[in-house]
Amino acid sequence: MSNIPEEYRYTKTHEWVKLEEDGSVLVGISDHAQAALGELVFVETPDTGIEVVSGDSVAVVESVKSASDIYSPITGEIIAANDELESTPELVNEDAYERGWIFRIQPTHMSELDELLSAEEYQTQLDEEDS
Amino acid sequence: MAISSLVFEIAAPTCWLAMTGHLELVEKIMGSKTPLYDIHVNANAKIVDFGGWDMPLHYGSQMDEHHYVRKHAGMFDVSHMTVVDLHGERTKEFLQKLLANDVAKLRSKGKALYSCMLNPRGGVIDDLICYYIDDDFYRLVVNASTRDKDMAWITEQAKDFAVDVKERPEAAMIAVQGPKARRFAISSLTQIIDFDEEQVENLKPFSAIDGERYFIARTGYTGEDGFEIVLHADDAMELWSYLEAAGVHPCGLGARDTLRLEAGMNLYGNDMTEDTSPLESALAWTIAFEPEDRDFIGRSALEKQKVDGVQTKLVGLLLEGRGVMRSHQKVITEFGEGEVTSGGFSPTLQRSIAYARIPKKAKGKCTVEIRNKHLDARITKLSFVRNGKAVIEL
Image (cartoon, rainbow over all chains, first blue to last red; front, top):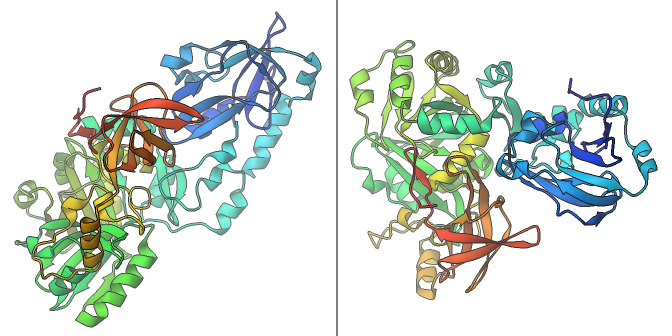
């Protein structure tokens, strides 16, 4: 059973999304995803100021043996990236939902958030993958 | 993030199916299991398919396992490796035909030889270790992923020499590796079998002792000291438990790959294939051209290649900045392009290292294309870490 915070939203491709009070959105990868990848050794974060469309590959996480793309869950502008991951990529393994955030995005359409998976729906997807 | 795109790179044809959400499929094609399989599962190992075998990738932390081997002692279940015994009066003569290296170099019983087994084009069918046990008895240890083609090839070539080719699928094999590996292995072995301790303590590198219930070789695939021990299944399970009690850490295929990559040891299927010769794979040292009249398979093709000139070479690469090199990435040198054959992250150096096949004349600096960016890398010797120490300057 994975750790899936109730207050976050999720994508089918294992990103999480957290709406902040200022209307911006934090993005990272789920606890399930970090566990599946294994120990991360490199995170390529996106440049700030770029406009992205939902589904764009905007970051890369590399574990000892594999590289995986991180897709933007929504359309908007990248306004920040987690610089801490440059020297400590393992933060994603240790604290996937807080200190392991990857980038911050200013959504173009807030309504896009409603289309993402709820914690319950994401759990259902993981259950289906496991069965 | 697309978890389904995860691929366990070590020449694993069916890849990391367990992560794709097709567990049903995995059930149906479930691989062979070593005698230690249940022990791995009970230790919460992540199991992956490797050449048709269900093998442990890691037991929690691949990185910790790597460091354990470099600094202390780790153990690997390598029972998937194929042990082939060759019996017959003409076995030596047969091996002098079959192998690019010359078993005549093995002057005393128990000595081991690393060699390639070539096709007539000079391409590598497999790499292996050959042990001289007796005048009419040699043992080969070949790769698991190439088992079927190896057995077919060896059996076919053996016909002319009346050599009996006998696979030993019942044999289990444990590799104990690291600076403290031999000490722990000997103390653990004393708990389960009778053997001459002093003889094992004094075993020279690349030598083996063939006992009634054991076969102990001072060989490995990590760049550290240690043993590879062949045992009956029951003895192997006992040995594993005693080793673990002694503080030897179980290690999976993940750490095995980063250790061998740091140590400069080629991986069959990645760094050499049936389409590349040992001369293009940094394995020229394993070809015995002397004596000139030894007609091993592939000899004429290699001689022609030497006369015509070899166009490519296998080298080490050290990435200067951040990022991770992976197999099949493009390498750009001032003499043309090449390709990464094995790549990854070195836990010891905390940098990305790789092997690459590049134009023969290239040296110094190059760039590696990683996701459309060209990152600076340094061309190095094919060895990064030996006996726990970095052998290149960062």
